[in-house]
Structure formats: structure tokens, C-alpha cells
Amino acid sequence: MLRSMPDPMTRRTILLAGALAATSLLQSQAQSLAQGQAQDWPAKPIRLVVPFPPGSISDAIARLVTDRLAGPLGQRFVIDNRGGAAGNIGTEHVARSEADGHTFGLASSGTHAANPALYRGVGYDPERDFEPVAGLVKVPNLLVVRPTLGPDSVAGFIALARSRPGEITYGSIGNGSSQHLAGTQFEQLTGVRLTHVPYRAVPPLLLDMHAGRLDASFQLVPNVVEAVRAGQLRGLAVATPARLPALPGVPTMAEAGVAGFETAGWFGVVAPRGTPAAIVDRLAHEIRAVLATPEIGERLAALGCEPLPLGPAGFRAFIAAEIPRWRDIVRASGAQLD
Picture 1 (cartoon, rainbow, N blue to C red):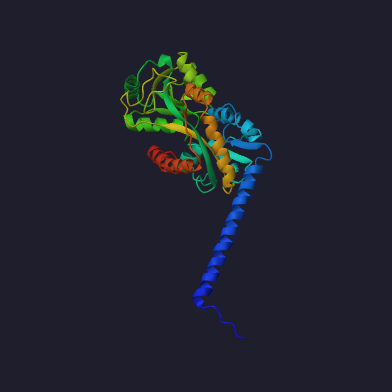
Picture 2: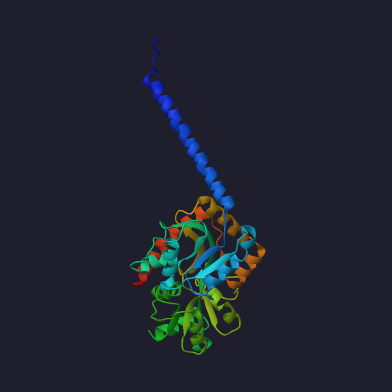
């Protein structure tokens, strides 16, 4: 007996159903694999590459957060300081590391926003080569001057700089740093001409300010907050929309008469591209839990930092918005590094 063959429409329906079933099976298997990876992770100590030297504010923030992750994750974090080239060396190392969930990197406004515009080649793509994990903190800039310079206000500082064009010096931790770019932006907004003095690190910069060899700095608040409180440096204005709880007596740049001057560095955590999403999500959850604790909130506020509690999607969007913003600042400054 001859059996009738299914018509073409029926055959297509059968094939489509089979394809859908196979796809569903693959998705289920992938989901089970991802869940298994998250459950088994971490299998050993986790390495966080900080692309700046020990003792820097980036290093301090990284340790402040990771010290509190060992408990919930069951493994300790090892800080791997790989400084050099304004953070490019350590960041490129993260981009080339194995994406197994045991190597992460500290990202910053320099490494993932300003540097790609400053350098002809950084060795990585800030968006394509990484999986954003979580935001950590924003760190605003503060204009400080040595007390013996004279001015006790931004208006007085501008008047002095205009009377002595090119003679007033300001220091930063290097060409292209957020402090350097803050200085060039200040010059553009106020029409003054200052002389930039780059340093390799904050301690020698502050030493020269205390000794009267350096006039000013657009410094990250945590680096100078104690010196300002002690009267060793004079804080003229913070580059934030509102005053900081850490320095309530210091006005904002807008209050001081310089509108549009808002600069802040920031830090977050990234992973090499291809790191399993389940691992990224787990670490992001634990980081946000740490940032939400009153203890960490108080510590950050005392330093003059603001929490940046962003998860993977939010941090990705944040980085994408910061890249063109810092590119415009760099272009306006005219800075270019090899």
C-alpha cells in the first residue's frame, strides 16, 4: 500500500517545529551552563587589576570595596597594581586576560573615556574589549591653592592670574589626567593663562605646594580633603553641581562665578570581553550591596566621593556617554599624547 506524503506546507510546519525545539533545547542548555558557572564561581582568588600605583585614590577605593566582597563570594580579591601610561598598560592587560571570571579591571574616566582621545593608540577599545560590571564612585575635582599665594576666592584667583599671565602654576598627576584637563577647561572658561606642571604622583605635588614651589592644583577631593580641613591648603571651589558634605564651607564653581565648570573622575569595574554574563551579574549584585551599606556610604562621603551604583547595563550606557564628553574636552584642550 502506498502511503501519502505530507504536503509541502505540512513539511515546512514539521521542520519549523523541529527547529524551534532544537533552539529551545540549546537555550535551555546554555542557561543551565551559565547557572552552573555562576554556582561554581569563584573557584580561586579573584584578581582585580588596578592600572595605577599603590597608594593612589584608585587603589584605596578598590581595596575599600573588594575587602568587603570576600565574605559573600567566599574568595579573596588580590589587587594587582599595573601602573604606567596613564592607566593604559594595566587596562590593556585586562583586555587581553582570560575571560574566566577570575580577572577584572578597575576602569576610570581616564582609561575608558579620556585616554582614547588623548593617545594615538591605547591598545584596547574601551567599549568593544570589555564587559562593564559595575560603577563604583564619582570623584570630583577641587581647586586648591597654597595659602601664601594670597587669594581666598575663585574671583581673586582669576584676578591674580590675569595680572600675571602664564606665571601662576598648577600641578596634576600627568599630561592628560583629569586634573590637567580640568585646568585647561578652567582656562577656556575664564580666559586666564596658567602654566601646567605635570607630576608622576600626588605626594610630590602636595610637597611642592606646601613648600611654596607650586601655586595651585585642580585636585581630586580625596587627595586634598584633609589638607584643606587642616588649613594646609586653601579650597576655593568644587567642580560639582552642589556642595560636598565633606567640605560644606567650600562653594561650587557656579557659586564662585564660573558656570559650566563641572569635572569629576570616576571608577568602576570591568571584565574581559566574553566573561560569562552570570558571573558579571553576580559580581555586580555584590558590589552594589557593598556600596549600599551605611559604613561604605559614610566612608565615601568623608572622602568627598559619590557612590556610582550602576549595574552592567547602566555602567555600559554611562561609559558610552562619557566617551564623547571627554573627547570634546580633550579636543578643546588641544592635548595629544603619543
